Structure formats: structure tokens, C-alpha cells
Image 1 (cartoon, rainbow, N blue to C red):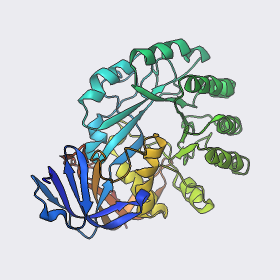
Image 2 (cartoon, rainbow, N blue to C red):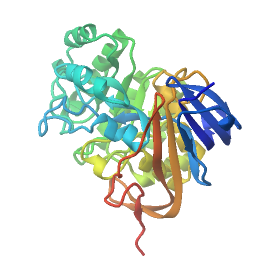
Image 3 (spheres, rainbow, N blue to C red):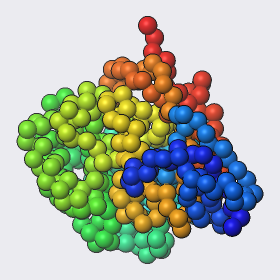
Length: 406
């Protein structure tokens, strides 16, 4: 057999399958054709030697929450989104989920002009707000009738297979007055189309004194979510987060997870508290997935790999953070049979990273600094058998987090 691409002498780390060994991976016609310790004897059109003590070959990383509807929203009016490949293959990531950047008024742009031009696989979750025109402002939805079930139905019929789920942001004044009804209507839309619902918790602009009411809405939400739905921003320090009235929320949260609700971290610039994540780690409340919530603004500050490094700083292992961004993320998408693992016959989606030891500084949403020993750097991304080199990085100096100042 002749391989199109041979990844030689790689330290394969695939926690979902229990793989942690030096192996060669042969790729042919865009798929993984062979995995083994001695494939170098086979002819290959191109060989990448991946030797290195701290270099790892992973299943293609999956970012479960990003904003990549570049060109589908108007700058200054809607969400400022990244280009899919900027957040994807150029950053060590093979699959990104666009989490509600567009509604029925502009989702067609994403399908017709963005997804097909990207090398990165893009999954679309539609914002349940009919137009999603103010995101990420104070609120996406300012009146209940903006959840237009008929318009959503027509949108899905017009673009079969484009919409893979729905997104609701529990932010703004409407949540305080009608949060339960907002949830009921969003859940009804998701159930009508038998698709998952992702819900943003934590209101960065929430007014002082609204914490108790927002907590009640979050607990109502947890009771309404079903298997396959996604609670995003688990580690938010903002009002409406799960750590407010934790003693009341934890049993409901545990029951939701036992039903199959996915707990996603989605750090972003506005919904990650280091102390919140640390307290959850100590309490055994750990996210199923790590995602970036990357936007055009955030791409100058962090990446999915840096989000993973933040969890390393909290105390998670490398295998933990890789599992959260591969096998677990694939399961959250309902695509464990095709994504999140290195296996013969699968499409060749792979990520090569370096683990760099140092003394690094991180900052969370409330501007609290914390330190970590490791940074993660993309070396090569392989998407459907095609290799992509990483771009320069998210910081002026490249990919590594900032060095800690004495």
C-alpha cells in the first residue's frame, strides 16, 4: 500500500480509546488507512516525522462553541465572527460549532458562502431569536414573539441538513420577566425538530441584585433540558451561573447530567472564572467539554489550545483536556462514530501539538490572574488527509500564553 501521507514516530494520545503510545499513522484518500509501530517500511508520497518528547498526535480537536459566521453578520450590528479556518485548521482544530451567531434572517449566508469555502468542518446551531441582530449585546431576544417557530420551520425546510441544533442565550431583561416562558418556547422548537438545544447561562451585564432571580431561571432550565442538550458556560462567574446558591443547584445539575445533558465550559472573554472552575474541580463537578467561545475580538487573546492550558493550570491532566476536546466533544455532537478518535477507516482529522513547560500567566473574566506550568502550541493540523500549517498565533509573540512576571 502506498500512503498519501505518513505521520511517522508519533506519540499518539487518544484518551477516548485508551491510546498512549509511539505509533505511525498512514493516510490514503483522505482516510486513516493504517495505524502501527512500523509503517515506515511502506511507501509514502509525503512523510511527516513527529518525533519529539513533548509532541503529541491527537484526534482532530473539536471546538464545541465558537463564532465563525464570518461575513454572515454585519460588523457593528451583529456578532463579530472569526473566519472558520482562523479558529479551525490554522489553530490546530478540525471541527468548530458555530453557536448561534446567526438566526433565520441570515443563516443562509453561513450555508451558502461560509461553510463551503472553509477547510475546517463547521457545524451550525441556529439562534432561536428570529434575527439574532443584537448579539452579543445586552440581549438577543427582547420579546417572546421573536422566537418565530414558523420562520424557523421554513428556514430548516429551505436548507436541509444545515441546522444541527439551536442556541439560546439567557441574558437580558426578558429573562428576568419571562425566563421560564423563554425556555419553554426554545425547548418546544428544539423538540419539534428533534435537535439539541445549547443554552448560554451567565449574564455578563446582569444588574446587581438579580442573582437570585437568574438562579431560579437557571434551575428551571436544568429541569427542562434533555439528553443531548448542552449547558454552556459552566464555569461562568456571572449572575445565573451554577455556583450561585450552589447547594440548591447542585442536585438539579447532577440529575441533568445523569439524564445526558452535556456540561460545556465555553470560556470566551466573558464567562470563565478561575476560582469558579477551581471550586468545581475540587467538588468533582467537571465539564464534559472545553470550548473557546471564540469571536473576532477574542481571537487576539486566546484559542482553544489556550483554554485547554487554563484547565491544565487548574489541575486537569493532559489526557483529561484532550478527551474533553475530542471524544467527549464528538459525543456531544452525536458524532462519536466519525469524529474524536484515531481509527482505521475514519476520515483523517488529526491535530499535532507541542506541550511546552514554562511559567505562564493567565487572566479570567474578572481580571484575576493565575499561573500554570504548561502552554499548548499547534504544530500541524490534518483535515480529511490534507495537512495545514498553523498561523502565527493569538498573541504578538505567537501561541504560548504570556510569561509570568516576577
